[in-house]
Amino acid sequence: MSERAKVLVKEKIADSGVDQLKENFDVELGVDWDDAQLAERIGEFDAILIRSATKLTPELIGKADNMKVIGRAGTGVDNVDIPAATKRGIIVANAPESNSVAAAEHTLALALALFRNVPQAHKSLVEGRWDRAKYKGAELYGKTLGVIGFGRIGQLVAKRAQAFDMEVLAFDKFVSAERFKDLGVEGVDSPDEIYKRADLITIHLPKTPETVDWIDAEAIAKFKPGMRIVNCARGELVNLDALIEGLDSGQVGGAALDVFPDEPFTEHPIFAREDVVVTPHLGASTAEAQDRAGTDTAEQVTAALTGGVVTNAVNIPAVSPAAMEAVAPYVPLCQTLGQLAVGLTPGSIDRVEVEFRGGIADNDTRLLGIAVQAGLLSGHTEEAVNLVNAPQMAEERGIEVIEIKDSTADEFTDLVRVTIQSGSDVVTVGGTTVGPKNTPYLVSIWGQSFYLPFAEHMAVFRYTDQPGMIGKVGSLFGEEGVNIGSAAVGAEAGSDNAVMVVTADAPVSSETIETIKAVDGFSAGYAIEL
Image 1 (cartoon, helix red, strand yellow):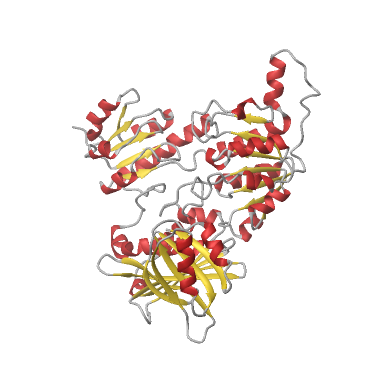
Image 2: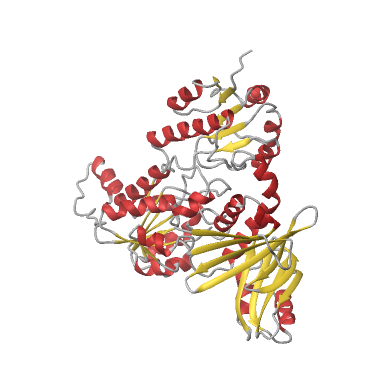
């Protein structure tokens, strides 16, 4: 029996990736296997490489007795049950950077096609018409591009647009002013500034409840008249009905779409329009991107099977077992504090300070700093954030993270405090862990003290410290149909200001928050989803 690890390549990847694996392992190609054959034989293999077609369910993963790593040749891992793999100690790794250049280039290709009417003119000519006057276009030169979402792909698009002498505006609250400056891009404080000034906008956001229908009738009403739009990110970001209305009214001058709400997507009024350019989700479909996906994933699998560092693991961070044992109980706390802090930050992030006090400060806390970064960025980037890629993604956005350690702590055995600098605004939150299960507890916001466990749905208010304010919040929550689980107030003696934290049994709507903020005495309100 061979001592070499066995690797199953279940779907087609680049030959160079297969050859790379064969240098170290026994490789079997199973691209023509059906589901029954895969279920019967998956237990033989130490690793499997897949693309998007193979569904690795909990039942299938349960049969993978020897599996050590699942390699996904591409970005998304929706077809892999991550919790099931993690429970069995199987590393799941992907290739998040493999299609970045392809997606950026396709964005510019669609922009050029849209401005110069390339598909329409091609169709007219091959049908025997010489419609030269009809398809007079416009130049990118001198136009203003607005980039919404300034991660890896957004930054590559901006760089290429600058080669066309376009002015570039960008909105991303997770990118620092210094990073925008370094890239020669004007960072703006809100999407509205882009809507007002840009001739063309491109969206590079993840799909989250907050970003679905990001471009809707309300957003389109704010557009500079005649603005064009390109979407190569997620189909759900653009409301197609609102887009058609905007095109009909002339508020939108044209659109280019590579992604759609449901795919395959072939029947919709949008396809009948002369002012819309469409492609069938080709953003990552280049020979080079497919080749990179295969070789990048092969590298990850090789690292996992030979004791190397798996840099693109989406479920297991590359840290030593000793370090993990010491700090692992604090990882959920740090991620939660990062999520809470950014949820209370009104503008872009300039600087992040993470302070560890008490016994926890005697450990190697680098993993915990990374956990804070993962919490900060979670749900706000195109790529999924994990404990491996969070530092790189923060660096790409110019977010400076400073760690402070002090083995003394006045009130708690261990304390983690996260401070975000956003222009002149400073947000500070603190937490600790409680009990044998190390349950994360909130202990401070903006310097005011609390002691309550975190909850999935929370709301935070700042207000003038005066009688009756808790009752007003309770009454308004009741009117909005929101049940309060618990409430706590932090108010330092001698201060006129107070902070209230409320937990709920369901998400707190922005309408509820705005209603409460309008009450006399309230100065700020935030809904937080953890």
